[in-house]
Image (tube, rainbow, N blue to C red; front, side, top):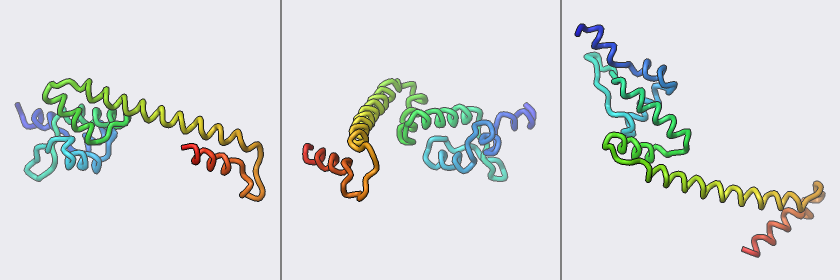
Length: 141
């Protein structure tokens, strides 16, 4: 294998950032948070990522889009390395999301009821039926 072929197997931080759409500073942060393993270093001290880093960074981005915290993503990445099943962790996250959705739907319903109590703007503000309804709701809970 010549030197050129060896170099093509490694990515600089800039190339990794370009291929994944993630900034170099975010990549360094992921490295500090142990989401990316420490890359090899060139003789000049530059980071040399392997091709697996592209998959890991893209996984991190997709997991973040799904609402996973960095700590949860680290757990999921451990599952991929140890060939353990991530289904339980993903199921737990889904349950948390469903709970948040139910809570938000409840808030939406309460706000809709409050909006229905006020057919117009009030002057003076102290006469606002929304405040009265919120105070009545507080007494009920």
